[in-house]
Length: 543
Image 1 (tube, rainbow, N blue to C red):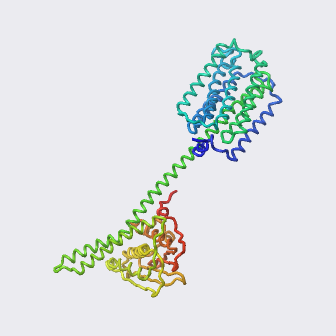
Image 2: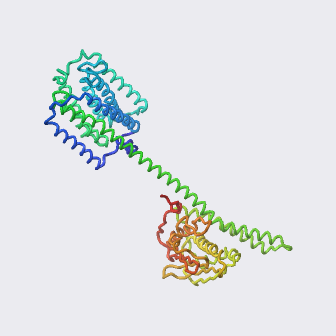
């Protein structure tokens, strides 16, 4: 996998993500604080202070713990992005965490006057030099290898295991050399508190390596980790300069402040890794919530499709059942009523064809492809819809009032979809008047002109009416005034009318009754603008 592909795939990683402007400002603020602290201490760095033997174990426990946490987090980054540079940097932090333990145990006065582990007078000094040398080398290795292309990506678990083994072995070897063979090593301290020239030169080498790493990071750094590692190396270099140039021995002001700067080295990277981990967890939680909502929306959309089919097919199926029962009665007479039975069978066939048209209409409604349209006489369409529900109107004692304006211009539309709209409106009117007992049940259908370029179709009932607060939401999905309604019929009707560039509105009288008004343009739009498919519109609300 190339670096570019890896960067795109793991954009959430600090190894590949670019720092934001706010992060850059924060990094500059940390550098500024280090500079201020360095400038404040520099004139007084060599002033001897009270010897506190407990200071070293206290401060270096923090260094060791933060270093090992940083190493673990960097190993996690290597597992994700597979960069050999990150693996080397993680090894460097692990090296610091372990060698700091040896340095603390061997430091004179920390746990015993001469140090533990059989340490000599020079053991702590040599461990300190190699502590800083190892970290400087690991940063250099990271800078040089972080963008290197590897033809074969090693197994991350195996690479981490071998790295940890190598680092532990190296720290154990160095600890053994600087303790058991301490008498054969060059002298770093002339006495308990004063450095020799060798110590100064050795610390200078560490400083040079750190400065070189900082320069390379400045030139090659692009990622968030590069930026904060630059800040870390800057603090690391400040500590080395204090120990190399500004002080001549232990337990001076500069020596104490240098140890405080040493805490910043692992702490900065640890805070960065932890912040990135928390941000990633938050992002994953948001993504999980969004996926759950998307799943709920898809299930709701599927439910909407099934409910829409059931809502539309219910009417022709009911017609087939009623006409089938009627045909059976006519055939059971003596003599059989063949004419009437044949009429019922014809109605059943028509209802079956209508059910087939409904499936085609719904399929088109839930897609973004507009179907073929044709000139339609709205008066004829309204009469056909009324005739299809004639028996149901008679069964509930509902009278009809028809006022069709003659010679209306035809409109270009999808015949089946508009017929379903009118049938839905008539069926809703029938349902609204079923419970009316104190006045006549009348269904009124009117057609007429609406200005010069549109026609209007009105369906009015004398039912119980609609509560004023419900009117604004009448066409919203899953909003219904019926006890067992799914709230999809009017939403589907509105979607169909909008596809025909029309308007569907509702009003209700104070004394009951509702009027649905359907306005359609006479002239078709040259390039119809289709709204989103209904499958994307009818979704369960989320919060």
